[in-house]
Image (cartoon, rainbow, N blue to C red; front, side):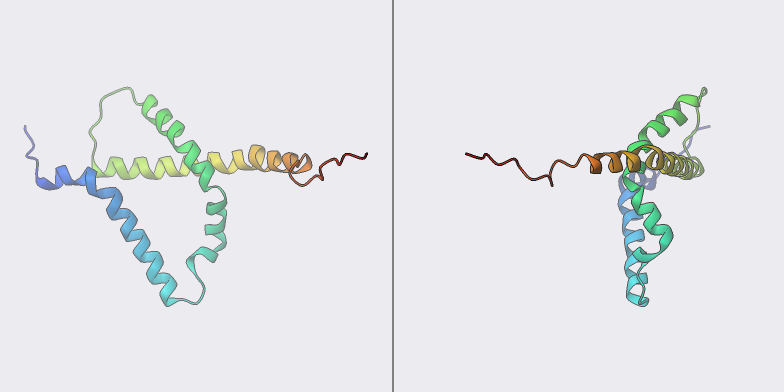
Length: 126
């Protein structure tokens, strides 16, 4: 059984990232225009903003872990891509939350103790 390919099959990989970013940006823009309190002041969004760099760092190792655990060939469908997106983001957010609590924030505190930028330079007394 052969499956006929349409132009949308070819355009999907090209347009899905740009379209999703445009949709999210439009929703955020409209929400900020309609409400006095902005989208970025939500407490949950601030938590996600604090761990966003960690999510960026951890999503590739988690993708490799997910793909490495699949032993058989699979069909890529819209449902598979959505499930992969949700699972990858959820696992990345959970991992980055704990890594930020256990590594990033303690290291930042430790480095602030040894802050060399704010120490006065030694002056030469003649």
